[in-house]
Length: 146
Image 1 (cartoon, rainbow, N blue to C red):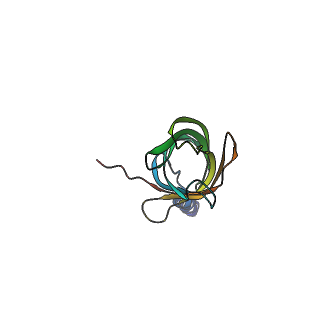
Image 2: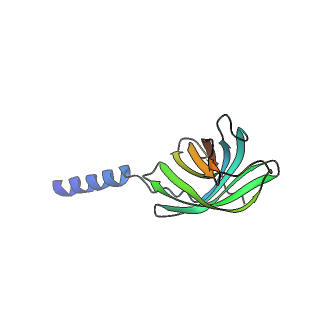
Image 3: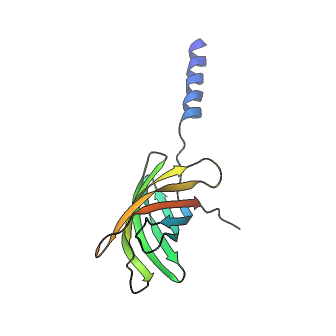
């Protein structure tokens, strides 16, 4: 009887304290900043992510005024709090003649306090002409509406 009680108690503790898998799939919206010297200090940004296991695929959109870039991305989830991604190619864009869109990579931290959840972190990248001035990404999970 004592053994059964200890076994059941340890099972409850294991289930109660184990981390649940988090699905980051969906739309994340917010902004991306660029440090001083960049083309602009701030742009709108959206990530559309699909997660399978710890692998992530999707698209990113960066935009301002009527200009935008859509890029394919891939990455991975590291533990329950870190997402790492890199854009693999520009699939569509409209730009000002004097600029190039940065193909980026980033490491973002999942912030689960409050609602909606947030992804925040640093990015860096490059154009065909060389490195971009880096910055930060601030996104919130978009809540689907009926």
